[in-house]
Image 1 (cartoon, rainbow, N blue to C red):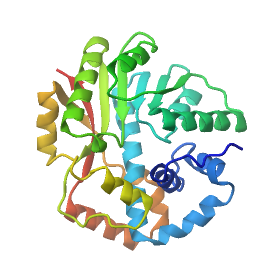
Image 2: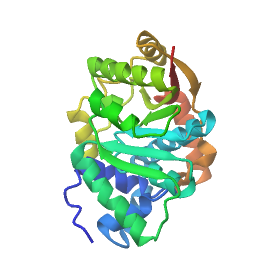
Image 3: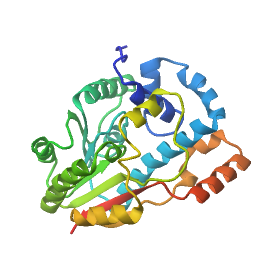
Image 4: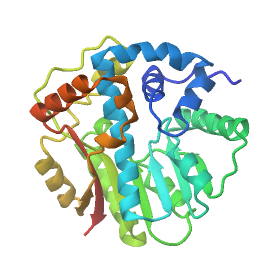
Length: 285
């Protein structure tokens, strides 16, 4: 087994958390990194309401992308800043028509590639479709275009989750320009799970690596002021909203960790606060 000690604390936290969901290959990756029995130990955290809220949030964010991909169709997919998500592997194993390029920064994607190789060999998986795991800075248009050119002819779906909250306004605009030019030429959709808005709610003060990471990267400041402001921002960058992902409470595997009364309480609390995030399928106009 390889040594995965180089994985950043924030990435580890998110990978561990999602290991308690039915998101494909995540639990397997957790056991590759930390060993058998890790999830049984992690299960104790499900008694913590703060942990559960995060768990629901990240599972729903992941599945909102699947919801939009199913809605818009298309087999050419490039994922930006994919982290330790194995959506590309899952699709390539199950669909011979899929051509998927999985990207992130070099230090992340190298570890991701090793994990993917171990999952494939350890489970004796056969890829029916195409999967490439490649290093890329999303703001590097030359590399971005080189990778898009590796995909077969036809429309391209560009997807991301957990990226825009780390970009300031100028960086967001630059990313929009790159994606707009590519989709104008090739056709397709930008499936963006990062439509986060600022809310006047208690700040996440959990004493852990993930919270510290969010604070250090000015995540709250990088959110949109409102959904209306987000729509105007993308309109100014040449996009319109094609579809907003459905709410997916009935698909949340993590609901098994709470009782009916707790679920009702969480729903009521969410309704009181209002939406803090949406996933949009954007198209250039």
